Image 1: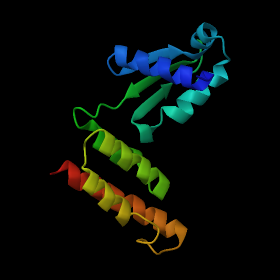
Image 2: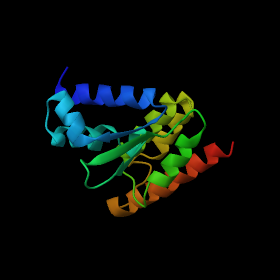
Image 3: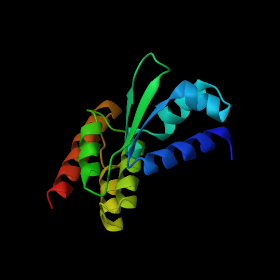
Length: 150
């Protein structure tokens, strides 16, 4: 297991034990794991993203405190989290990550996931890329809000 995987596993375990939210100090954690704080930053920035169902709050000074929160999918917050996370543009790749998470969290069925993915492909949105990604974001948000209301 490489260092990034070890950091991710430790943070996931800490989040689970703490009930979905944990506050860490990068320098302290780096010392405990015998790594540099930038490795902690890298893992947080790449593996605890909104697309994966996390929110991050960073605090300057005092050792670089970071709060990592898992958006609970058990109480149906995750779909609304997605709506709030998606900006005015959305790539197909990012939409696919969100859809995969919705499927994994059992917020949607396999059939719904396939329909959503099909409707958001570049082929289904034959516009120039800057227009396509804006249209994809609006369509995706509408899909999610429709699913929330069912």
